[in-house]
Each structure stands twice: as C-alpha cells, then as structure tokens.
Image (cartoon, rainbow, N blue to C red; front, side):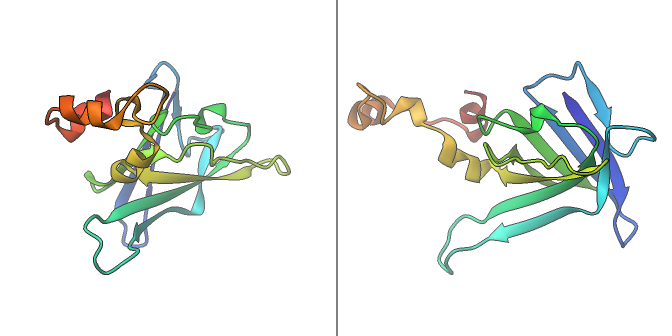
Length: 160
C-alpha cells in the first residue's frame, strides 16, 4: 500500500510524507483527502536526534508521524523493520528516510477518528534488527562468516 500526503508547517513550507508498505503500490491512499480514510493531526510530524554520549560517532534519528484514521490499518503493523518505508520531505528535500519501527504500532477504537502514532527509525537504527548472514543462528559461526566477508555498500545490505 502506498500512503502519501502533504501539509504546510508554521513557516508555510510544504512537508510531504510517503509510506510504502510491503513494496506494494497497488493500493494508493492520499492523506487528507476529502472523505478519505486518513488525515493529519494538528502536530503531524516530529523529528528527533538521539545522542547517548558526547563521543557518539553516529547520529541516529527518529520520526513520529501522527495520523487520524477511521478504520484499522493493518499495513502499519510491521513484523520486520523493512516492511514499511517512510520518507519525509520539506520543500522537496529529504529530511528523513527510514522504516516504521517493528511491533510498535497500536490503535484505539473509541472515536470516529482515532489517532495513530507511527514511530519511525532511520536506516542506521534499523540495522539493530538485522542479523548479518544469520550470525548467531544455529550452525552459523561468526569467525567463518568474518573470514569470508567482502566489502559491501550500505545499499547492498539494505537490498539483502
């Protein structure tokens, strides 16, 4: 499912949100469409940077996307971190590229429109959910995998 929409922030900048679930664009939903299933809340997008220590080498980012929905959206519940890709743009420039955090979605059923809060993690943070070549699984030894390892690009690892 391809879910997309835009809104304008307080500085009148166009903010676009694009969510692609399971790599499937066969069903398309526009956020904020008149009479549609999804719309933005008053505070729809929040970006945060996570720093644990002054000596951190990598700066990981998180995003929170808040939507109002009429019905349950099962595609927002992700078993794997690569099930749903989230991109957020400001005036056409990418601010955030990442994934919906796996198994972190919940939705109430009390009102006509229920607020859904999607916790999103960037590509670096998503690596914590990956097992490189199944290291740690039964019969797969780290030393053997390390000896056979080759240099790869970050994009090649994401495609795997």
